[in-house]
Image 1 (cartoon, rainbow, N blue to C red):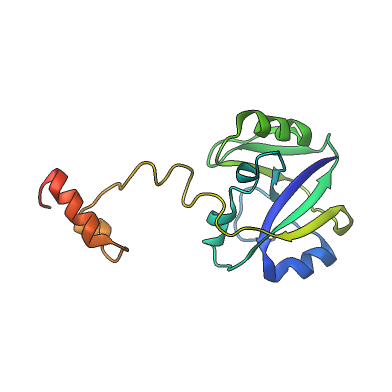
Image 2 (image 1 turned 90 degrees about the horizontal axis):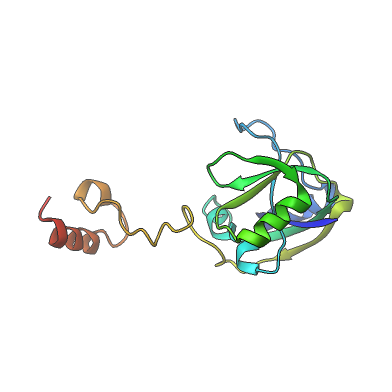
Length: 167
């Protein structure tokens, strides 16, 4: 049995404990399933989605830990790229081997409440925002139009103008 973690809003924890993780209904998703990450020895890689998911509007993230059989088919791969069909144990081994930031796994079935191992509160500052490596790339454009209303926009525009000239 492979251990996975699903990041959820703390306000939904009681309902998840009672009913399990159900497939999303509607919302225009092209893929139907439960997003989760295989639990590996690296805490940062396992829980990398916490900060990005918190941007969606909840304050406190919890980890819903559950077990599924090793031979369960899942879709796994990097964010915004094609996913490959593999077994749950293969997805865990791939993540353990590559330690890829932006990795995601989609389990195409509901998770029953009896499969849930634990629901735990998580550190709220784990992971990345926007996409892996977004802050390493720097600012895309420092012109007044692109930086309008942004935090620290004046300093960003001044640094941009010092490098590339006035806009």
